[in-house]
Length: 201
Image (tube, rainbow, N blue to C red; front, side, top):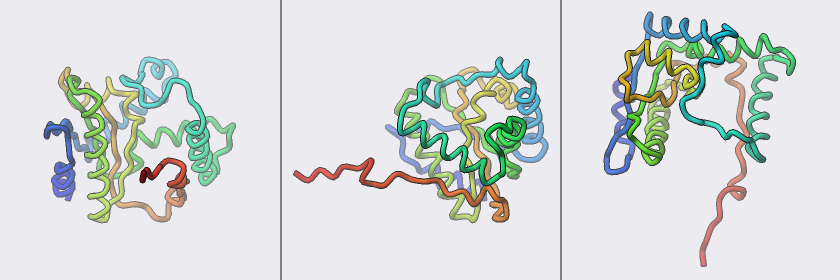
């Protein structure tokens, strides 16, 4: 099934057909071992500052309306989970679930050749979206995760990545637990009129 999903996604468009994606699929012991290594670093206050993102996913200075959207989705999730704004311990534990791939049986790590530029990263987004849509067609759910980029050194060592490979993100994939309270979260979307302008004349 995963091969079928990737086969569909491989048809995603890319500039001059460069197909800049590379995928590592982790299951079983390999997935568990990577999770344990990352969580050990995440839980250790002495190690955590040593692990920083290799590229800036988010802005260095947040502005409206993006900061409000970021805060709202975070507090909406924590609200469903019953995590208060001062409960740092439970916030930390919830964030750590990223590195266990949220309990999914399949974890994916995506890399790109360091020589590729901004356009190829746009192509990569279409590839990731295609994986997620194809997975839904097969009855699976997925969660793309930028959280893994912070621990790219651990991932590089664990997977034996080549020096020219840069970690783009991770992704969890499996069957959704419809009883899990966090799966009731419905993120708000801006109305079309706020981001689209129809130019007719």
